Length: 180
Image (spheres, rainbow, N blue to C red):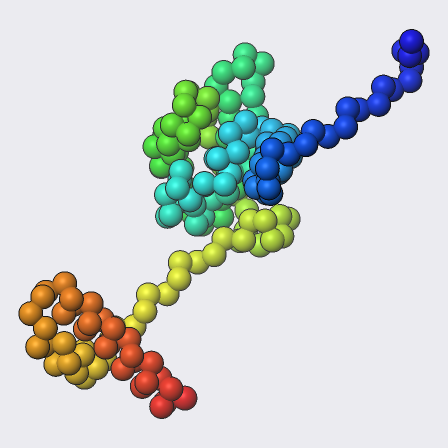
C-alpha cells in the first residue's frame, strides 16, 4: 500500500496504433491549454482570425484575451488595435461580435473591448500590423498587345485567356531581366 504523500508512478505511454502520428495530434492538448490560459476556449478564434474578422479588420486588429465575468456568460473579447484604426473598428464591433460568436456557436462574447497601441511597442513581434501589400503596376500596353497577338489564333475563349496571361507573364519577366 502506497503512502498518501508519495506519488504513484505514471502509466507507461500507450503504443501507437500504426505508423507516424500527425504533429497536430501531438500538440493539440498543449495548444488548447495555452489558449485556455488566455481565455480562448476555442483556439480557432486565434488560428483563423483573418477568416473570422475579415482581411480588412484582421490587418489592424489582434485578439489578446477573452475574460469571463462572474456569471459565466457574456465574456469580453479584448482586441489590440492600432490607434489610427480604432474609430473604424469601433463602428464595426457589433458585426465583429456576431462573427466571433458564430465561431463559438453561441453568444459567448457579450462585448468587445479595444486596446489601442502603436504598430510597434510593448508587444514587439506579436502585434506587428502590416500595411496592405502594394498593388502591382498595370501591365505595359505593348506587352499586352503582343500577348493578345500570340494567343489570337486560339478559338476556345478560356484557353485563349489563359495563354494570353502566360504570354504576358513570360514577356514581363524577359523585359525585367533585360532591364536589370
